[in-house]
Picture 1 (cartoon, one colour):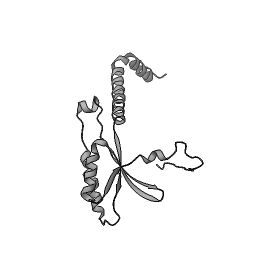
Picture 2 (cartoon, helix red, strand yellow):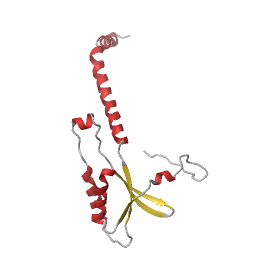
Picture 3 (spheres, one colour):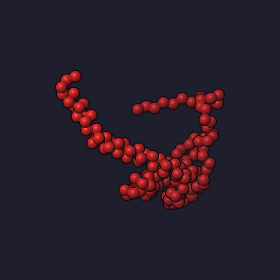
Picture 4 (cartoon, helix red, strand yellow):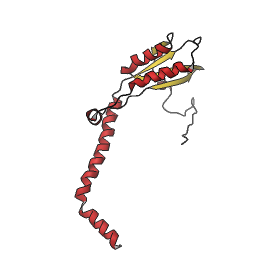
Length: 158
């Protein structure tokens, strides 16, 4: 072993007690944040809203843009205690377009606490819209796919 490499290993082994607590602390901190934020995410109560907008409503894309701009009001930050002790995360919503039995449905999956915000934003742009809570359509698909009824295949393009 070359002299330089031997000295480097010697220094590394001699001073393990200095750098190992730092490395362990950084590892613990990262794992703690993942753990506490996962608990917080699992505790979110979700609601699935089905939105039906009458076909005779003629609106420009600006109306939907204003709807999405209104949803940006859910963005909030977290202080040190909220982030590292309570596991506060940025909550999210999902706008989903689903084709089922030849029909097209528009769903919004949101935390229960944001339901009023979502409904207010929809009604502000589409006053004649019909909003109702819907059962989760994901449970209509069997767990063992592909099977005799569903011959599905998928891939990811990166």
